[in-house]
Length: 585
Image (cartoon, rainbow, N blue to C red; front, side):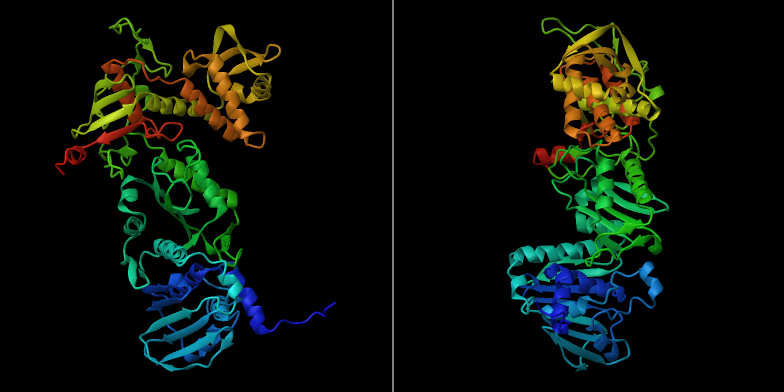
């Protein structure tokens, strides 16, 4: 058995480098964070060969003296922890004192630094061998060059991807840091070609520059004053992605990929976004440094909050507040326009949405295929609104029903608005059911004659196990032998839906979420399913007053731009859209 021995310093540094220097993007992250901590206001990054050949980071920060330069390449040497107490209230991006020696252990590292009013000096580290500090020439700030990355650990180099892919990862790191530091100008080039040029900007302008004007135009603002302070922009539910790659989270100026914060995003969007899609967001959280621990992982992308539940709840509340605007409220926007990339305009800020009590809504019974729709005798919609004439709001006045599925309306500014009547009414029903559930229980309507529903035995058993939870939704059932269920009441808002299809869908919903899913999540999903069954179907003929009442209800209802499954409820065609369609733009 080999005796225990202390590893040579060079070997220890290379092992430590494996945690810090994962790929070229990790080098870029560490060097740019050092520049930001040094007070830089302009940062330039040059990549060659995907960063494997050469990485050059130049900044106009404070620079370093000759003595500091010699210490900077030693392990655990840092200027960012003046005393041990600051380890529990870190206010800088870096603090470990491992980045430069780790990079120097696996690559050829050269640093030139100069402080204002002093001479420049340089030092080189090659494969862990540290050179001497020598006089040099250079402007105030720091210039760090990393060449032949992983030449000293060739096995690590074999695991890297193509130069193009590695360069893209590095640019993504710069984008995220640029979002966190809008007061700093960033420039990045790949093999002599400039790929990123971001001047100093205000926060929202920087978000637009990084995520695109299309996102910013359709985004919703998020704002919370304190404990914690939360601000930024989130994309509307239809502006979603197949992955979470465009979720930019910044805590105390530090870009993070924290699982808890991402989970909060999912929870906030789950009622308005199609399953399997991910929201787009640029969110900033400010908390006192002493209540968050960034010393969790060498890459410093995950955090631990002292009050994780409080932060999670605050973020969910702030996001739902931003999402919970009616289709007619200031700041609400249609989720789709005719263009592939939407640039919707905000509704008038002067518009004041009405509450449910002021909105009337009635529907005629479905017309038969052989007879025209009756002219009168309206049947109340399950929403339970009383009919009342109302002036047109931002969604305009109804003109016609198209394909017995869509409502065509003219907005006050002349734009055409097309509304999916089922999707829109589904959202209205969902919000009213959710409001009743929040108050304790959905109001039930007892059936005069209980309905008997036959289901597969497994589905019937699953529903009976959830009977107590379903009763809170106004759905009262009991066993009737075998796979039969006796339905004694249904949610009053749904009118008179077909119990067979409703219960079959509810059983499928319960099976999908499984036993481990929290009751609250299962109830939310059940509400969405109930709303779908209780809403106006395609093929239902509507009168103009009924259509207008639906538009007014949308303007008064939170999250009315999407249905319960995250699909859009309306789109808008303005004069510019028509000009482009006819080749006049």
